Image (tube, rainbow, N blue to C red; front, side, top):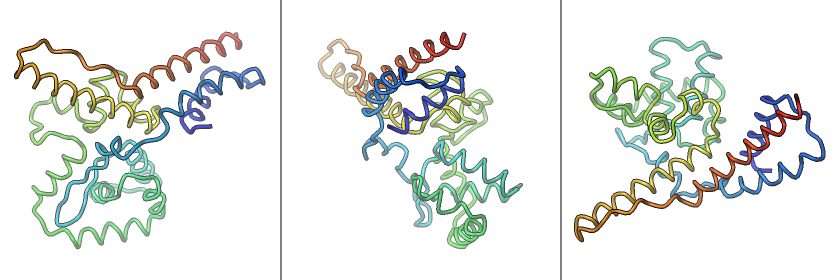
Length: 240
């Protein structure tokens, strides 16, 4: 069973208080087949999240949902406060975006040593550090406008998801699997590319712009949500 399916079923069971029965297995299998088309993430799909920014020869990676959750949990567990929080987050951005890296530094002493090592290697100005930090979090260089600041409080990634697909910051941060977010970002990147291509063609040929067609993965994601909602409605009725 795909991880995406397991998470969806777990949430559905929690929301509906449903007790699994043999009759449910066919429904779960249908949902899992749809998830198969969304589970694998290619290198090109990860590029938006894995493209690093270089400072002093050190690579800094865009902040992901997984890292955000890890950071919040470790700050609470290790009782990290004040400037130490800033240092921990800045170091966290140097880790490649994969699960193995986060698991490696689940020990506080190991993370502390890594933070100190990073501070010794950084020979740059505060402005240079701030610029890289803002790039990784998707923040604008100038945050004087309060409205713009509010839109990017959760980082550029969450801001894009809110603008393109709606929902709430909490939904994207705490309820949506990372692989789903990766699929949405791939669809968003495809959309931007298609719009740019259409714009260039219209400018050169003075033709009528044609809206880009939805990607196969976005269609699969829509099918997954529809099927999950069908299961939720059925299980909710069974619990009445």
